[in-house]
Amino acid sequence: MRGFKKEFLRENFLGLSLALIGVACLALSLVLYSSRRGFSPLALAEGSALDGADINLLEQQNKAYERIAESVTPAVVAIQSTQVIKTQQSPLFTDPFFRQFFGNMPGFGVPREQREHALGSGVIVSADGYILTNNHVIRNATSIDVLLHDKRQFKGKVVGADAQSDIAVVKISASNLPTAPLGDSATLHVGDTVMAFGNPFQQYFTVTRGAVSALGRAGMSPEHGLPESFIQTDAAINPGNSGGALVNVRGQVIGIPTFILSGGAGPGGEGSSLGIGFAIPVNMAKHVMKDLIDNGKVSHGYLGAAIGMITPDLAAEFKVPDTAGAVVQDVTPGGPGDRAGLKSGDVIRKFNGQTVDDQNQLTAMVAASDPGTAATLEILRNGQSITIKVTLGERPENLPVTAGAGAAPSHGALRGVAVENLTPSLRDQLGVPAAVLGVVVSEVDENSPAAQVLTQGDVIESINRQPVHNTSEFNRLAAQATGRTLLRINRQGEGGFVVIPGDNGGNDGGDQ
Image (cartoon, rainbow, N blue to C red; front, side, top):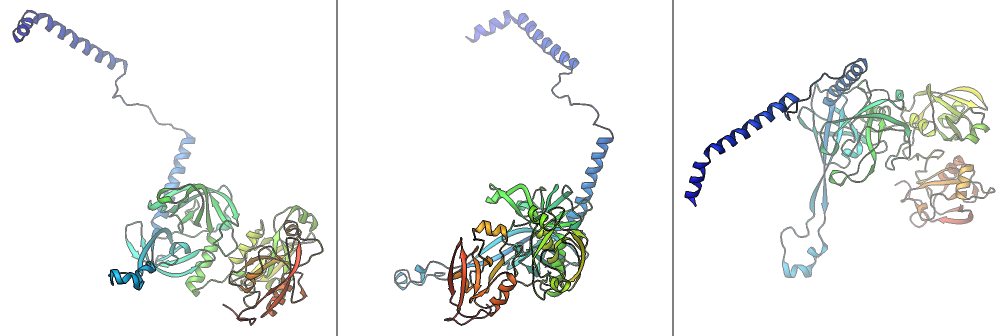
């Protein structure tokens, strides 16, 4: 076989050589032809970039956003809080019968320590180390680690925290730190461009951009104990952004991102952004921060008036041109509003020169003010414009946030029971007959003696056989109700009597 191959090659050498030369020439020709036709697979696209006044404008906008990011990012921090939780092992390990077989094994019956870590954000607001963040970022923390953008790490100390507003202040021992200026959230408008800074899903020092989607959002977070007037934004906010900075186009902090409406699950099983995030207005945050640093506690302004929403029917009744503002439903006797001459039926249209859109915004404005400060109210009374000067009081700690509600009593058989006036809309919703007068239970503290017999939506008609027509009468009679207390209530259209047994066999236990 090998001899056959050698003989074949000798006899056909010339033909094979010519064939190989032909194939090589053909391949070379194809390469040259492709090169001339511009079909080379390695050729890169050429051509000038887009140009023009509109493109230049976009480039200038990009440069502006870059300046904002470069200015604010160094003042944003990552906050990792650690909470130590002691978990008790099964009672089986301490059972004498069990120990007869296994003896006193090391560690059995001893509580185990479990460490939980949470990551959030903060923003440096003073060069000497004060950091603004959310209360829920550092809540119950046994240690706090703060990471700066330049990779430096510090131990943080809680200066103060306010659960009602979800604002906290942390201090680190450092100087000459970069800071972010605080702006005025009252100047925001729907559609304004904003940027969110924080550490979502442990992606440190992330910047997102979006717009102010809405203002004055209320009723969004059950954890907040203060009137809500959140900034809504579609700038992406995710777990880890809490406590960071929402910034306007001037690089000023105008909000503190605090929570999101979430759908599905992101990394780590946490809900992720749907484009609906909420931030605490910085004006509220500044007020809380100042009180925490100066006094160690927070005081909020108080008007002493129950206010409600302006419906089209009420607007027509009170001769108001539109539904903007808040109607005064009731005035607390002797309170700041009463002393200033505020009356039931007044419609508050402006607070210190700022237009009031609804009752939630007004209540938030008042709460963000310092007690003792003078405020100017522009109101409509029977269609006539009136200006009232009022000196704000201090908001009671247990004052409910429900519009139109009065302060829950802090002692007695009805302590922890918050009520509001029975309006026509509430009467319709609850199916209360027209002849029934009283106040509606808006909240009952589970530790209150009244929690045994009252529930949200009950209408209290009388206390110890004394009629109750409004929140003022309720507050007066509730303060006198100690020990066993007789109530007449209406529940879902049906009236009846109930008895609050009181504490310690009928004796009032006082404050808890």
